[in-house]
Amino acid sequence: MKAIKIGVLTPRGPAIECLDVPPRKAAHFISAPLQASNRGQTVTSHLMPTFARVDLAFERGEGAWLVATTGERYLDFTSGVAVNALGHAHPRLVEALSAQAAKLLHVSNLFRIPESERLAERLCAQSFADYVFFANSGAEAMEGAIKTARKFHAVNGAPERVRIITFEGAFHGRTLATLAAGGQKKYLDGFGPVVEGFDQVPFGDIAAVKRVIGPATAAILVEPIQGEGGVRVASNQFLRELRELADANGALLIFDEVQTGMGRTGDLFAYQHTGVTPDIMALAKALGGGFPVGACLTTAEAGKGMTAGTHGSTFGGNPLAMAAGNAVLDVMLAPGFFERLRGISLLLKQRLAEMKDRHPGVIAEVRGEGLLIGLRSVVPNGQLVDALRAEKLLTVAAGDNVVRLLPPLIVEEADILEAVSRIDRAASAIERAASRPVEQETAR
Ligand code: PLP
Image (cartoon, rainbow, N blue to C red; front, top):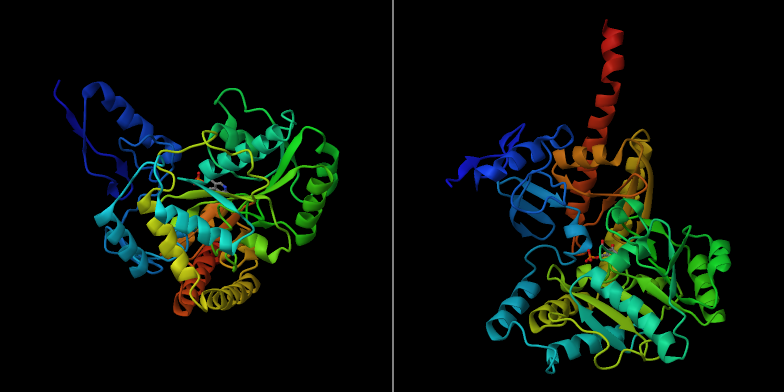
């Protein structure tokens, strides 16, 4: 059967190269992408259409800047959603990956992997942890954390302790267990029985935690700052009380630092400025600086059930991923890295506070820590993200009508100032658009 050529139309013309589509499939490609709600926004290809993608592609990047296939330059305050901590094409990371790729990409965990032993040793030296399990994503790191907590109780002779207390607005990943942990209906719908064992309570509500904690509780799981949930910061007091409740009830405390970890909030790990230490911590995102790698860190005590054969991952901790992780640490642990980061974060926050005062009809609140910053928007957050993108500043929407600013941690002062002036222009454009009908009426 002869293939027919079809393209996907957006207001700017064909969004992608024409696809060769067998006639029996053409109807899908014509109808699915052009539904009214998607028109002009969604680009359809042979990728499963699980993402509502913006019609924009990049071919290279440098530092905090991305260059689109059209040649246009964008200031990247998404960092691949808190991944590209070292920005794009960082020479240390490029060099480490190239050198490792030329030697050895992958060997099985059947054998010792010196690069992974080194990265584990460095992560433990910098944290509370004694052991690290390497995975490939945040969700997989979180699965490791949940399994570690349950297994701890099982080997302690309390296999009935399986329940994990989690918080509304949380996001822990898209696997079946991490979806259940996040408890968000929109992500769970249609995927069958929800994995049992999670008790969800409002974020920040210690009385609610006291009500659900009990003899079946294995752990309390919390993000020190809810990223996807809208840059909602847990107070130190709340985290302290969680620690006390966990201890008093023989439960473990798990921090999901997939988004907050690896420098994002101004310290290597967010827990380090809360005064509260977890038993288990999940990392991913910035750990590989753009190379997929996740990690579950644990104390020797909490991890004591995770013996040979209890858990595994084919790719987890392979030499290439570990070269990335070690290069990221080389940069972050260099003298002055965090001092500079904290200075630049303060500058951004101060300038954003000025923007909030200047544009109260657009920005309701500035929140977050380090370079995990949320602008709670007055207008729908998607509108603000679009207006910022029109100014060639890339940002990410989050829950609670928030727009996240996640610049790379190596962002320069000049980039911060440039971003703020783009925010100023975008907010002014929104204000102008909002006032237009009134002006027209007055003119009449
Ligand atoms: N945990 C948190 C706090 C996250 O922000 C995310 C992703 O956004 C995840 C877990 C899941 O990570 P991944 O998408 O790498 O599976």
